[in-house]
Image (cartoon, rainbow over all chains, first blue to last red; front, side):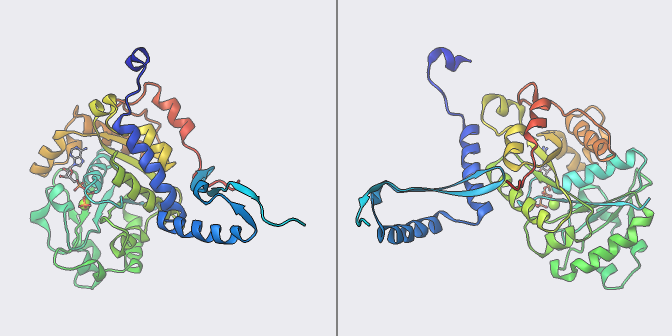
Length: 85
Length: 269
Ligand SMILES: Nc1ncnc2c1ncn2[C@@H]1O[C@H](COP(=O)(O)OP(=O)(O)OP(=O)(O)O)[C@@H](O)[C@H]1O
Ligand SMILES: [Mg+2]
């Protein structure tokens, strides 16, 4: 309530705990560790770079969960095609 | 009707499994049920002292398994409740002294004579845990509203599901309403949203538990004490009654929110 008047939002330790738990459980449940995700990212970059010119700095790979399923989300910015048909 | 075997487990240690087992045994016995509580924490025997029966232990679980006594001889009758018994753990052995098949057999032998067979599981996910859940019809998972305990509970839920024990139910222990109100503790709805299993009960942090454990008289005997009320409510829910959840600092329309939050864990789509 008070936050509405002051305009600033206090992030409670409860919210921090909840977010951290949600994130760690996504990894636990899928058995995919953050380290493994990094390795996957490197491999993906290698494979995709053979076909496309991609922005390696802009790549984002995240694990998420929806409706009881783990999902791997990859956002890979493409700079342009290297070859044309 | 044969008895129900219910295992109380948690993953993380020290969250209240033994306290819960002792108090649910007392509450169910107070409701006129025939109850036996089994201490499956071999090597770290605790349930006997929490129940105040430590001076009566003659034989233990391992003696039964190794044939040094009959099952009946190892059962210790409670001081106050004539329909409540304890099967103590061995103190000088380790988890490998018993195997899951032997636990199944013990449960099988107890079912005809009792309404409830409660098994106090050790912490962890190794053989002690496997022993404790082997003979279970149902599993109760105890957690506290803390990151590490909830994380471990999630792991246990997965293992119980893989073991096809039917849906486990959750008890959230040691809730501090003041901290929840300040936003400094996960509340019941947070934990349920994260773990997505059915809620069986919530127990407040209560000093009476420590006092009662000091004396060896489970808090459930003390009418009017908050934790005692919480355990009595849980026992009635186990009996199939619908009992409203206590309000422990979470949002006011907790009950309605809980309903919506309890969604199946694994969806196919
Ligand atoms: N709701 C509560 N309020 C206050 N103290 C509590 C509460 N629940 C448990 N305790 C205390 O916490 C301690 C640990 O409880 P308990 O022995 O039941 O945990 P456990 O899960 O069986 O531990 P272990 O994993 O070692 O077997 C005990 O000292 C107990 O008295
Ligand atoms: Mg214990």
